[in-house]
Length: 250
Image 1 (tube, one colour):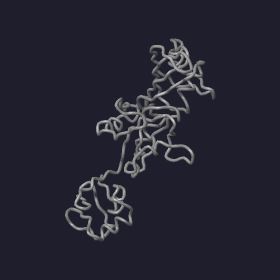
Image 2 (cartoon, helix red, strand yellow):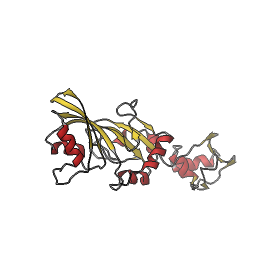
Image 3 (cartoon, one colour):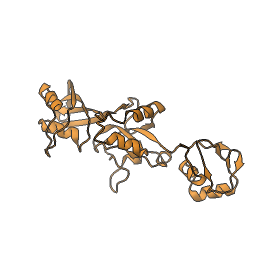
Image 4 (cartoon, one colour):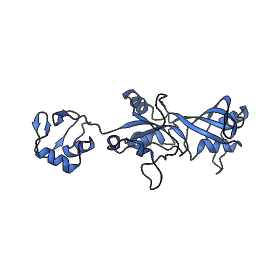
């Protein structure tokens, strides 16, 4: 599908200035389409097939953005908030131009993989309860996590509001230590996204999550080279995998 939009909107979204600044630039003869000087800032262009230049520099326009953030503690998964710092506040002005939003949410004190995009259709597919998209977390759990917990999670546990979770896969690693005391390191894969679900699942078996990090969402895995609080654009291959995956629908 060939995208069509006004030249001033395209250049504004690409970070070349406000609509009024673009209008002045057009009048000054700084904008060209296929080598022809633009005279009207409202002209409709097709960035997929036309070559647009601003001050003799080719404009590379994109309408969608896909970002992988290694979310740190202390920020909330929202686009704006009157009191709290949000994940959007971690983005540069340039990456905010296309208005990305977090796909789902991680708790304020939870770290790890968070996808931000303005692709509403993809976000809907990844979050739809009918799609059962796998999400894997690593956690430190206070006390000992054992085989009975693994069996309980495989069967589904009853949360504090009476909801019975879908089967989840628990992997138990070695013991560890935290400020709260001896802990067990685990990985848990769930296929749904209820509020505080991982923490509430462990509460259902009488245990407390101390730290929680999301490692993956569907085929997208957290880049181990990405420091906390940093982000990068997804590769073309990662975007392709996400679009092909879109949940199992089972």
